[in-house]
Length: 106
Length: 146
Image (cartoon, rainbow over all chains, first blue to last red; front, side):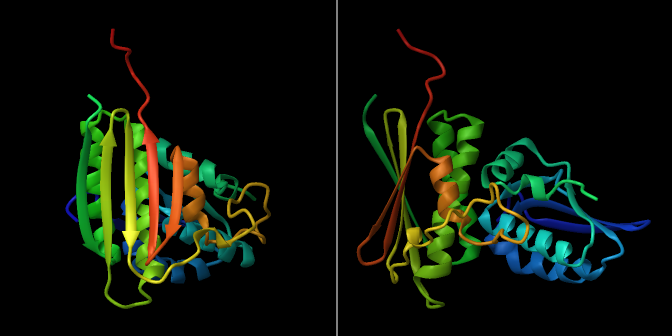
């Protein structure tokens, strides 16, 4: 649809891959997001960070994908975190209980 | 102003049409002067109901979702209905939320109904020739009129 189109951009920094996720992260873009994350999940020696500053909307599908990434990174003993979470998205993270799993931890 | 007002929308049961339902909801809830936060809550809840219909109702076959927005006084009721095979939303007995769970225990599914219930004032699910989910939100009175 016209408004709040899903956007995905990857930036490589020293030892860290940052994925900027913007717009509406929902069922419609689930396949695209999973495909984009798959190779990045495997890079266990790099920190993987999702920057959500331009994220407008997320549903349970999007949160489900975040959970899969959390678990996959944990299984590889690889660092993963989420930064710049907008307030109304943070509310959904808190509500579902995913928040503690998205923090920087090492 | 206790008149009922009714808006209906029928969309194909496909992922790319769920945002259309969100746009309609946004327009209607804005007219009713719901707060930004309440509108965001309802957007998620309505999308979850539509997602369920998209994912489970028609088993890959073509199908439709009927959405009805009914505004009455300070309440908005949204009915999301499909005509596919019924899926039991409340099937999962264990709590789908992640609170108090370890990273090994958390699962990526089943959060839809949990979110609907957390975000709306009332959630009713009926199975009759498909699945019907009725989501209701009351508008907080921002100012009392004399």
